[in-house]
Length: 472
RNA sequence: GGCCACGUGGCGGAGUGGUUACGCGCCGGUCUGCAAAACCGUUUACUCGGGUUCGAGUCCCGACGUGGCCUCCA
View 1 (cartoon, rainbow, N blue to C red):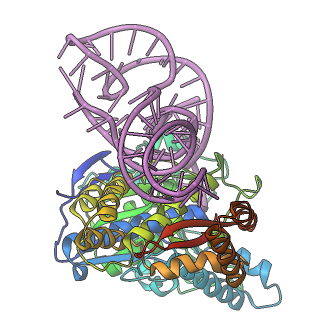
View 2: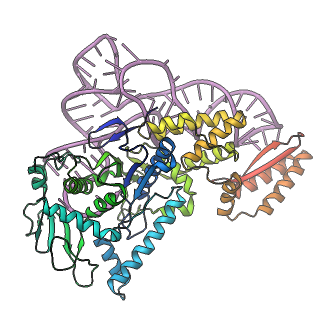
View 3: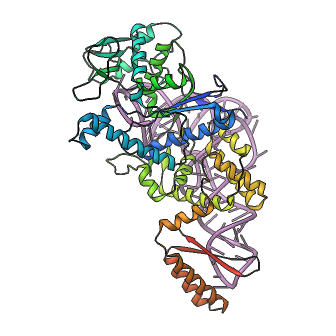
């Protein structure tokens, strides 16, 4: 089945045809590193990791380039640095904040089972590319210098009347609408309310670099331009897929596309624009004021990364997702069962049903239904069936541990004394053998009170065997 | 105010014109000393009101509800 993807720009699901099948190129907006990533930040990371894995499967591992940037220059970073390290020179404090936050981010997404992207460029290492794009935009008449700022003019872009896209086409709104809705604090140096900053002067102590467009004083980049620069450097003037959260459609991606298309005289920056939906927590918008702001790190303290990953994939990426404790418990239960059934089977051929489900615009709920079906076959089937099941799980970043490690993790997480549990189980087995069921039931209740669930079975010789696990 | 998305059974969540989604739970059965686990089976749905159609969860119009964006929040 051919890969089909939904494109935000044309609002349709289309067959995916890479510009160059020997090098499929995807850019996804990564974090601005100033604080712990929250669970909403994890959604695009996981969703596009699944797409990365699918593309590798379809086109070959060495034929996919996935770029996810680290934005390490931003006002929010500067504010955080000044707040957290008031004693340090600003630039030193900023380095501390960005290095620390990036490390946290990398640790978090690794725990979520995400592969490392092919390239993870940093904004501050692409200032030269940003300057070059800005220079081109000024030369082309799409941007202008005012009071040491460089501003991009959407009006100029739309007046150019070339192959360029219409500004606003991605976000599906007209310039007139934007002017009408423009906020009141329009900077005096802007020619039009809709102009946005490509470059701005740095205040003393702030990070600064030589400015483009002949500006004498040092400055720093505005938002948006860093992604145009990094995508250009690592993927070229045009590429296949550009992804991120739905909130980035406007202004971020609209402006990125405007900059890149005007700088390189193309009609499309990316062939396909993909955006994941928003996340709510227990039916409410996640916000610090409501008190339901939850970081990836906090969740990882209570749940294996794979539980968070599976929970995220239960909902189609474009739909809103409601992140609930109930959902996490269900995901954990499912994974417990899958680890049990897969039983450390090896294999590297993911099932066609799973690949096909993903090929339909990443229909992960359909994929999960396919996995349940494979699971049922594997539970009563051959080694081959188990291999297909296990390989499918691994393809999407699950089943990365052995069954023993997976089960042991739950015991570790609680403070249960295994020796004590085993002693009680032995006592119960003895009681059952002498048909003292009152005593055996008492012990079972005692274990239950400790949070231990027991399972009775028989071994190959028909002798009673009791296993146990931590009840979640 | 403008633009947009979503609304499916007890819960989660696919499906975009015509046969069972799927999972969890519930209930029943097998098994068990009794349970649990496992396995088998059953059950419940398309926010509301119009319209198009032989036929609508699926298309159109309207209402209601939830959420998002409207210049630096994934």
